Picture 1 (cartoon, helix red, strand yellow):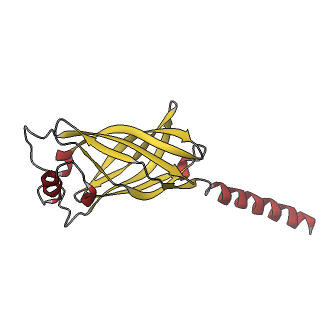
Picture 2 (cartoon, rainbow, N blue to C red):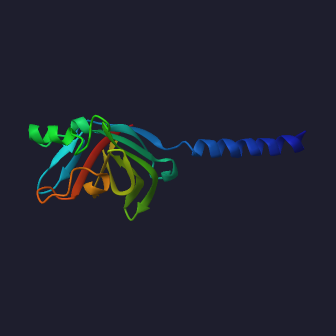
Picture 3 (cartoon, rainbow, N blue to C red):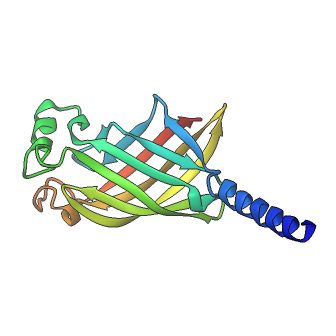
Length: 177
């Protein structure tokens, strides 16, 4: 009986350990005070963000970002530009009400991280690498960084001298467990 029991106990502990370690990434909720800004000579503005975040610097394989940016939340500080952004020429909010970013992998890069994922705008999904800085703040974290998006890759607007093709995106997202 001992001969049978010890291997079964060992296998059970090993499987339990593997299962528990596969679910260690902590879930975070997005807090007020976040900032998702797009910047260029013109236009500039910001978006709202919702979604789910799981992050553990010791368990990056189970960490995940699944973020939604409602197109209706675009704010440029100009009501006419906000309305134009909703049209089919630009973000086509009627058909594509959300911009989505879903991570597929997170890697350590020096003291920071790189998030690999899919950015979907106007129904077009493209792989997008996003640099990520993680700062501890009180009992939460702040995720921040900046990257660029070429709006032509997503058929947002038409080429123009007035609006640059490449927009700079800067973000700061405070989160708590």
